Image (cartoon, rainbow, N blue to C red; front, side, top):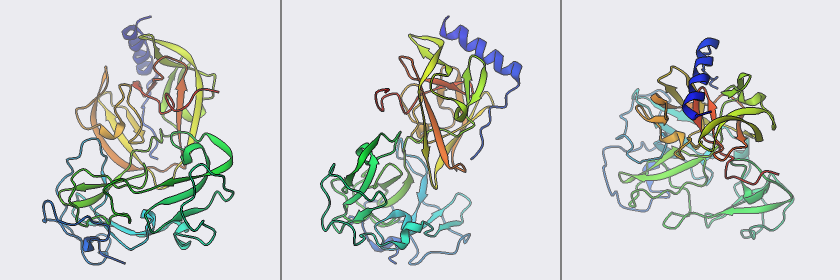
Length: 352
């Protein structure tokens, strides 16, 4: 059966079923140069106040971002000296021209950045460790943590290892040793000094801007997936269940090779409204069928051969986990709310 014919059948079935397609929605001033590389290198029209403003107080937004492939700003200014981004006070000057201020809320901020149980110097990557809660931030800017996930990351899926091993991250070349304050001066346009895929810290127009990262964390649990028996929420699927995928240039039903779920905290997703009227809420780093990311989508973008984007915005995520699936096809794509999308698991690891 051809791709076009099966698409027509699937879309007709959706109209008959009357599906809505909507997923649940789930210290130092920023301008002080703490972490800046020196020199304004651009516009000085926007500057951060010396101390955090009141939440909801008026502000003048900075110029809009022009960085391709990077999702929306998450902080224009930050304060504090903790090397951990989650342990600093941040503020975003919204398009409503008011400050949205976020104070540290993570329980981990009560623990020092370099606990006494940490090695005196950064551990050797891949060496064994025992305390999976241990995270060590060194004066050199290197962060090492004890992880039971291969490579130290759970994205897009944690490949469990036993015993746990040390993983480390050092600031990229050209970046300061301490995480740059949002709003402080920088001089290398486009340089990204983010500590991980959760946060991009990008030099734009002479200042550091904190942006929502592109971790491939997948989809909301009630994202509707096309199956031979009708649409099913992605969280209800199991390995071996049949879903529609593109295989050898035709849409066919194939068994799922893998189903994955990732815990998230303080996460944001792209809320994408399609010209069909349906809505998807998927992580910015999730791939489209042609290899782009959802974080790149904007009004007028084409999502797949049959769907255009009416609007795309970054919104808070209100679920504790995200989900993704891997169909057993030569593309790894599947159909969510009637549109063809990619899978974060397609090239993540071989199927056991």
